[in-house]
Image 1 (cartoon, rainbow, N blue to C red):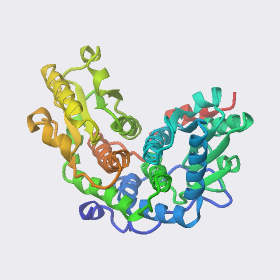
Image 2 (tube, rainbow, N blue to C red):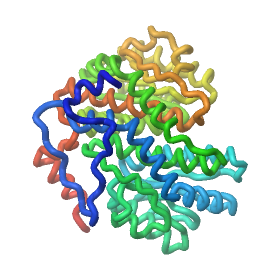
Image 3 (cartoon, helix red, strand yellow):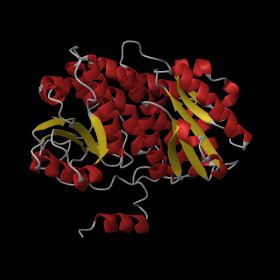
Image 4 (tube, rainbow, N blue to C red):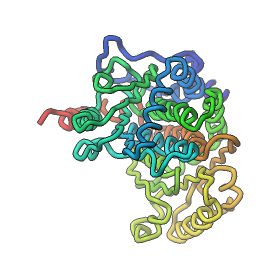
Length: 403
């Protein structure tokens, strides 16, 4: 962590980030810098202190308790609870649903517990129950439509967002405001903030007193584990024509987020596949120009998962790939170094933290730093997600234009 801080000049990662505008307004494009440090690097460095502040804030204002009660009530009645978003927020929604589902199971509430859905699809087929939207800036059209359509069907709604004054917040019964805004459009703060909110809410559902300092330690552990190893992995991946991420269990959410981050930040075509799926027909499209990265911080069924991962890595090397990996300690002890010639990052475990939360938060900073290293090697600025190029800015405008 201290090494990352030394690259950031005068930026203070302990200081609160800028809050959302009040009254609410769309945030402008990030400041376009000519060279590093990029805003994305500053946001990653800020995450340990940020998640602790978020936890403290949501406990103090009672919003996490309100959401925990709403989830307990809905699940107890057998009503659906769906967490939803788009882009980075969709991945945060997937992670939040997994964290909340585990807490409901621990509390003895009936299965299946909270699930996740992509916002556009949910808007087309809204449930009756509780819909929890995730939107960092609070104005994603598909997420707002999903919440609005759900309300029309009689559902309650909640929102995890940075701004309680955003348009999406106006249509929510419960708002968990994380307050501090991401300064890069390659959202990293926008990913970990709702995960932190979910962890605090989950602790209340399960009957524990949440410890915001635990969230800080988990993010910092992943950041420290990655520093010094992410650069060589990033350099190797940057030379590829495509990248594939493989993952299982809770790590599939992190894998999807890594694929999005690399495409946003470094413009390298990247796909996430389930560990088992990768071995069912996808190998013929890979070879020496393919970068492969295994994610495995999931604790559950670790012997079975690691055994299958060894087979996948060995098969990948036969066709010319040099896989890398981001691993938890247990996975690392079961996967020999020679199967990851592209390098590895090993994240220490955090006993006492639930599996889903530990896997998701522990991998967050490593995948973000790995992305930053790929961008550096490819000479790209991750902050504007290529919208400093008029073609891609115009493409974004066309995609968001009213029908």
